[in-house]
Length: 73
Image 1 (cartoon, one colour):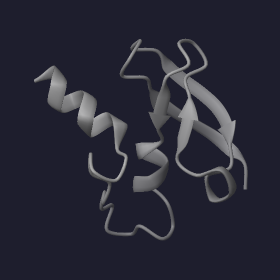
Image 2 (cartoon, rainbow, N blue to C red; image 1 turned 60 degrees about the vertical axis):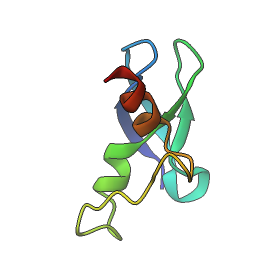
Image 3 (cartoon, one colour; image 1 turned 180 degrees about the vertical axis):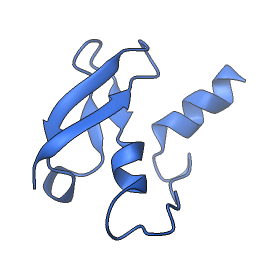
Image 4 (tube, rainbow, N blue to C red; image 1 turned 45 degrees about the vertical axis):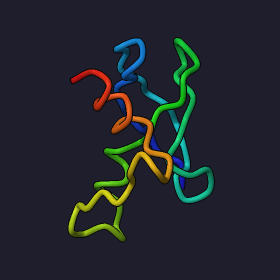
């Protein structure tokens, strides 16, 4: 089901609002400003099948935000 997803682009610091279907199109979108890939972390943490709000993405399996946060520290 498509819904508005809101996420911060860690590359250009822009808050992105995009109509997206995470079940069909997964949890990565391109930033509408700079084009970098963004993880829809908030959509994942609030999905119906993630009641524990657990993030199981790692740098090794493709989490872009964790990799960028590690570099920023």
